[in-house]
Image (tube, rainbow, N blue to C red; front, side, top):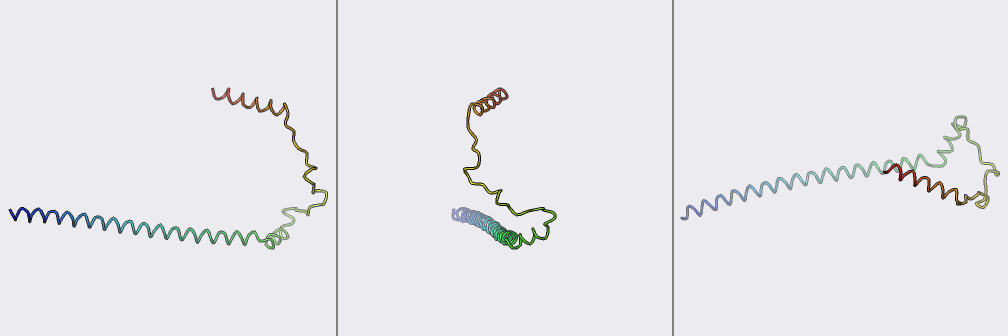
Length: 116
């Protein structure tokens, strides 16, 4: 009887060791994956920081002015004249009227006919 109990306990101990080894192996794989992901995140952050610095350098007004001066013939840019500036009240406002409502109704009618 004690041999059967010893045999059962031995089998339980072997199963327990196998389960423990499997759990340890899975935990190590998960830790490796987490380390890879953290390394990728750090690499992406560094790349983003580099791109932000590059964008900051490329959009500096002094640098842009030098590019404009160098390629003035290509861009054909001219300074604004005072006559090109207007006040907000000088801009004509679009009025909503029956024509706009009819256009909307036509669009809605076209959409309904194409859906069916």
